[in-house]
Image (tube, rainbow, N blue to C red):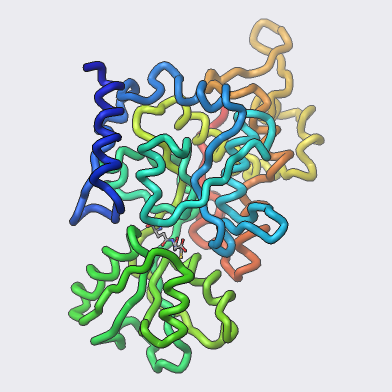
Length: 367
Ligand SMILES: N[C@@H](CCC(=O)N[C@@H](CS)C(=O)NCC(=O)O)C(=O)O
């Protein structure tokens, strides 16, 4: 059987057996493809990317109710950091940031949606882990937000550290890294935690509000949004000081979809590179005739090659030569996206600052 057919068969099997793909490591359940080697049922020849291009719209797996990351407003607009990275991808691929079908996914459905082809790319506060990279058949791409897990408790509970929490119920979203980390953390600290999973945040909120959860654990960035949304106001809860895991959040595609992976990666890198050069959605046009030929190459503007000819750089990524211009002019650079959606929650750049400011955001050179 050709490997692509084998993969389709495996995916079908996977869908039958894998209702919920949890964080793996201890209970890995699915195998959608094992290679990532370029021809394993994806687009070794560029077919997944071509399929998206032919469709004229990218199916981006995200959420409709995660404050700061992805919210569907009453006006039908998808707003948030992840929603904007879906737009970044669309702007790069089509020159149209709105050519996105935002697919609302619950945590437990993220990888089956990728495996079944329901979505082309997953951009939903999803942590890159070895088991997801491996057993779930996902290829994780440039991290867009370095996060870590935290704990939110009722303000009047009297806890000032997670170490004060013993014999407690910790509520989490199902199929997340949070679930496994909470159990491992309790174990490491010798604490007795019942980790109680729920399908979505609305259900956790209900239980938390009814006093059925001593703590609500999630990614720290998500907790900040959840605190802001508390029915009794943000002061009714506290976020404890510990950050007890590493959660690099970023997009993923299905293993083997190499050309699509490459295109998504460089779309993201464009936002980081633009910030590094001070190129924003407001000033990008003024850089089209920059004296720095690397900037002109990046934006798809013309430069003089070694033979004295005027040309533009086609890096062979399967993207239009002006993809970075489209990304920055239509959506903005990394800093603009962060300022629009995460800074208002009180999140600071911290480790998500650019590399020359001491952070981890670094784009390989575009040349
Ligand atoms: N980054 C972790 C956690 C993701 C996560 O828990 N997201 C929360 C945000 S608070 C969530 O989606 N909750 C359920 C919901 O969709 O309402 C992972 O990839 O598993």
